[in-house]
Amino acid sequence: MALGTALDTAISGLRSTQVGLGIVSQNVANAGTAGYVRRGVSTVDTQTGRTVGVQNAQVQRLLDRIVQHQLWQETAGAAYTATRAEAFTGLDRLYGAPGSATALDTVFNTFTNALQALRNDPSSYAGRTAVLDAASQLANRLNTLSSGVQAMRNQAETGIGSAVSRVNDLLGSLTNVNARIVNGGGTAGAADLRDERDRIVSELAQYVDIRTEEKPTGALTITTASGTQLFDGAPAVVFSFDRHAGIDATSQWSNDPAQRGVGTIVARDISGNSFDAIGNGTFRSGEIGALLELRDKTLVQAQAQLDQIAAQMSRALSDQQIAGTPATVGAATGFSVDMAGLAAGNSLTLDYRVTPGGQLQRFTFVRVDSAAALPLPASASGDANNRVIGIDFSGGPASVAAQMQAVLAPGFDVSNAGSVLTIVDDGVAGTRDVTALTARPTQTSLTGGTAELPFFIDGGSGEAFTGKYDGVSQQLGYAGRIVVNPDLLADRSRLVVSQTVPQTAEGDSSRPQFLLDRLTADPRSFTDAVGFDGSRTSSSMTISNFVQRVVAGQGQASQQAQQLNEGQQVAFAAVQSRFLEDAQVNVDREMSTLIELQAAYAANARVISTVKDLLDVLMRL
Image 1 (spheres, rainbow, N blue to C red):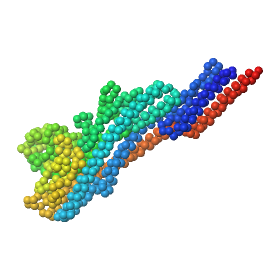
Image 2 (image 1 turned 90 degrees about the horizontal axis):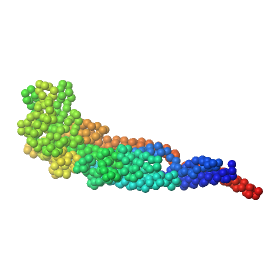
Image 3 (image 1 turned 45 degrees about the vertical axis):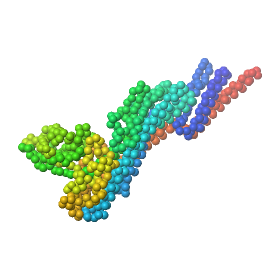
């Protein structure tokens, strides 16, 4: 080998070694820098004629891209579960532990215990005061819980707005970095830019579940798991969020802007086309996905449970149950009942049995005073064994009978004589047997001669609660408006006295006993709006049991959210650990590489020194 060739080979090796030493130094210096990916040098042996050397070193980041993509997916999942777990912890804290002093079940039990004491001593002024104090405390607790739930929804609304703004900022930041990477090739500077881009993408993955692809040019494209393209050299869409202030229980998300009471996320592409990103399911995970779920599902369900408690309590104590009288039309049998006392929201129930051998089924007809209130909301739909149907009463009794006939179709005959409604079965055909027809009007007087009374009323309107659906459903947000009837507070004797002519005896326990039974012994139908265990059927239980189930169910939901988050964080940590095995700087490993480079550097330097010595000898000849 010629001396010149040997010298060229040694010099190229020396240069490559110098680059490697610089990279090791850079790695060690950034051992604690967040987002820094370990660098390495890629070299290629070359031969030009008789000259053998090393091609210019290329700086590379040492990471597993498949694991990195998994890490970004797990990042979105971890942010989703962490956001939910934090919200459920706050909700659980708001409700209180079952049996604790401020827990809803404890406050409810205090009320029923006071009623029990009053039943035992109806004439006791202290006992009556205790009942009203406990009832006021219960109403106040429902008000507080409702306010807390809506405060959490408002927090979620604010969080969505902040997250959407940050996503736009991150997509904008990617544009410049991505362009510089494409133009930077494999230089050390390009590696720094890739670190910066990865840090941006990692933060983006906290807000939305993403999928990434790097093109041969180094350019990055980003799409959501749902298929919406977010970035392709520049932001593919820009998101906007019309935040709504002062969200309350009536504020719901809807595809219809006229019906929507909360903010929505609109995505606008570079051509000016836009779509509702919530409506098309763009955000399925990440922090934004969790906040949307909390605002529009979890907390809406929590409010529905509270509203159901308030509504059932009110109706249990105020709604009469007027059984129909037996009626016959030829061979057909059934019942007649007067509809005159029914107010908007009151119901009329038809119980029947499909024969032969069929199970008992029910139709619940709910009064509305305008066709605009129909159909009833999905939360009032009941199930296959209790179909809830809205009936427009504005057309008079004959129209009511005709509407019911259309719903019941063959198997029943519906007629009216003024306000008296008659429903009979199909007689000799024998496919249906009517077993009961019951009107359930609301008692609006404290001394109406019945045990029922308007104990709780709607504090927003000052009216008795009937559950009307005209306009906005009265039950929406009722937990935040329920109050003890001021007239009852002004005259607590009405807890016992149900009529004035002749006046009920002061020691009569009938009304206290009735109120206690309605709350703790009589089963009531709870609609699928409460959403227990994902069930879509109505449940029958006492109000006392329902309250206990709500409080216990909230604690279980919080525990499940925590467990899900813990599992997701373990999965995230496992993938992150796998990623860092290659990407994180290990100082011991770098020192080992340094020793190797020092040996290579010394070897190349020795060759250069030897060539110098030989050239000196040749010059002296």
